[in-house]
Image 1 (cartoon, rainbow, N blue to C red):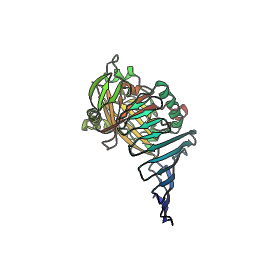
Image 2: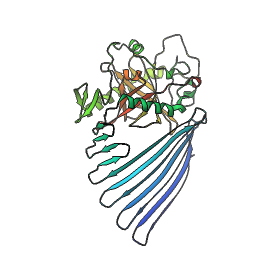
Image 3: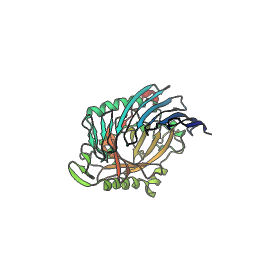
Image 4: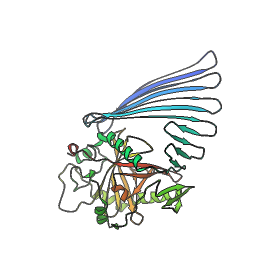
Length: 390
């Protein structure tokens, strides 16, 4: 049963100004045995001239059943004038501590905006009225969000993301999945098979893809959104809406009655039972990935993916904040080699990456929130520690 408490205060000053403030907190326990504690407080003050100042602080802490703690604290403040001008900033600290190790990251941002909707961020990003983004390192993107990133920038971010992901090394094993009723673990898999990374040679042989013709999708580099069109290697392949709709169709192909029947038929009734080695496994693991957007250095969104011979994608999505797991459904278009998937029963967002890109340790990807809104993100492979593979 969730527990909550809170208070709210407001009043009017002698000069005509007003103020309000509040604070609240609570906690609850998830089905996996984790405890989520949260709290926050905030307030604002408006002067007689119409200038409003506000600030707030909030935090959340998740304690997993194994004793690992994940916490995040954020602080924000801002000032808004009567003419629509505003300035503000935020600061966030994330960390994990416990039996699996410790990690910490700090982020800071600031902004200024006016009637023309221009915003500038201290992290080196400016957003204009048309959704155009310009970064200090030369990054530029339209409203659909593809942008170029150097190999050095991606590699450096990967180091930070993997360091922060130490608390996830116990996930997706057979014993871990047994604790989460919604988790999926196929029969004939060993204790930690979900963490196995696929190679392109093995994957092409397994699924019948041309071994010498992998199709790589490097968003922001070989795949670019520009002027409401999508370009692959410089050629227009359709509008951004058409490209997103194609991704949805690919993902939904993994939810047909035939596809879901193959998933159910190969699911282990007891994930902790000894694997059946009498036949080839029906599912080839692709591995475990942390998903981040922008310059994030840590992730609460973890995907474990697998594929079968028919190109059906299945696996699990783990939300580290709520300590909950949902199954992943999707497929691969064998002609284009685009992989797309969805989480649970939700039709959006749709996630996509190139199949060969899912054999790499880090890759760009796209998140399609709708036909009108698609943004670029990154996947970083997490490699399980030997001591955690039991």
